[in-house]
Amino acid sequence: MTIGFIGLGNMAKAIIGGILAKGLMGPNEIIGTAATEATRLKVSNKYGIQIRNSNEAVAKDADIIFLAVKPQYLKVVIADIMDSIDDNKIVVSIAAGKTISWLAKEFEKPVKLVRVMPNTPALVLEGCSAVCRNDLVDDNDYHFIIELLESFGKAYTVPESMMDVVVGVSGSSPAYVFLFIEAMADAAVAGGMPRKQAYEFAAQSVLGSAKMVLETGKHPGELKDMVCSPAGTTIEAVRVLEEKGFRAAVIDAVTACIDKSKSL
Image (cartoon, rainbow, N blue to C red):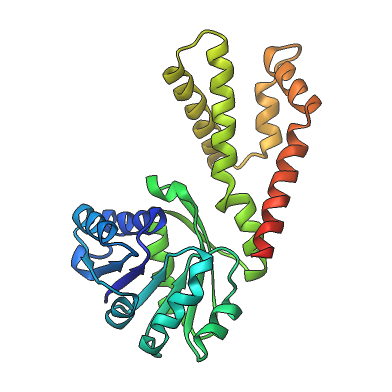
């Protein structure tokens, strides 16, 4: 079994790193290519994987091919590799906005297709990936793809109709969280805390809070109420956030992200 990557950017590197860290595949079983030789050599030197000089070579030599390029480049990449894809190969796309039906149309023939929407916390093995497939991908193949994706975080099967929503709530949301952490740290700096320490306090608080949601099973509102003592500091902060439209701003931002994904 050989896994190939067309595109060796951050997400491809996160997937490769997770696969190797979990021991699911060896470096000699992973091949990849990128637009520049510098990128190919950098990734090969870091992970020990094999490199190829063209998209066609990866598609020819790999059993599972990850299309890890930006959506606007997919059409060209598919044109490069379509003649090298046969009935036994699986193509996995991680591009936002490109549906399975769009991919199938571009290949102009029956192809085993899996669509994935990961996010950048995969770089620290805490990713969240949404996954769907077409009817040509059998259960054994699909479960193996899920296993690969779970090497760098969580992977959940969703209806393809939910993929644009996934982009809004998971794929793009790390950026919203980074903004929140930065803003909290800025306030702490304004209060006199050194910046490095402010980032550590803010980031650890977000990490711990997220873990409480996932591990306690409690509703976020219930967990929020547990922190808000009567006439205390926390409820005063919550009052200001509500007054400034914090919740509405987040909902509007996620909705705008979903709409943009649908238009890609």
